[in-house]
Image (cartoon, rainbow, N blue to C red; front, side):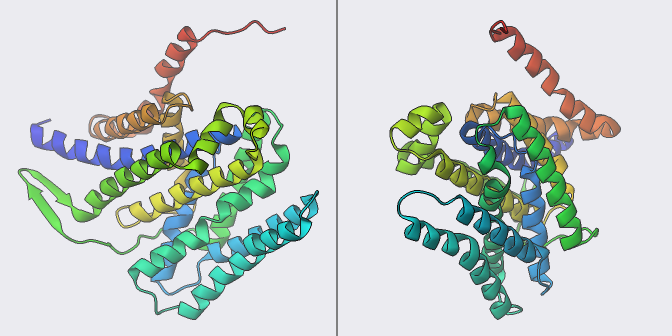
Length: 343
């Protein structure tokens, strides 16, 4: 391997690692706030890219029907759970968030079908996929807030298979790419950098910065951090754990959908592509201990680089080597952590 090949492999590794970093951060957010190891996080990636592809082809994306069905089911469940004072205001908020919002997004699509430019298609794709996060939380996880982490993990696996099956019905078995958003090419010595790849890295850094300022500067971000540290303590100071869970799932679905839109011009996405991508983000989150955002990001970049170089030296064993990286991390954490005796 000469230096030029190493530079190209490093470029691919950083590009892939940037996407894994976003998903790893989403895993950490969800687990910190809700204790859910959300296996289906990668499905938002596939839904985001395939939805944008359908919009570019002038078709009605299957995610629109998923949004309508999930919104109605979640709204009915929320109406049944509504209790206490201020029921009229709660009913209004539920009707707006779970019934009117999906209908408004669907109406925006049908009214503007065939007349949307690139930026509007991206915004519409996000509007079709991002609400699925809080709807999934309400349908599958909100009623299990006090369950064990293992039970939540089992439900999460079931949600993944539901989304995979629905994705097959909605988008079909064929793979799709979207049109390039940027077409410029830059030559830096032996390295050729496309503006599309550069935009993925730049937008990933921008999203990371937004998340940093959100969690450290905004009141809602500090409320989520408080919920992650102690759910009981957050409730004592008036922070709703349920609303924190809704916000966390909204952020996770937004990160997943944005990741799918970013990579859709440079890789072919299928209805089940999100599982493998999400699994690598999951490993990065494990490296970060499901608690440290910087460690998860560093782990994601390391996974991306390892994947790129392994594809050159041992392509057939690439995924096995990448997934095997988690074993020494788990052994190291097991040796350093203290294990209380079980009663």
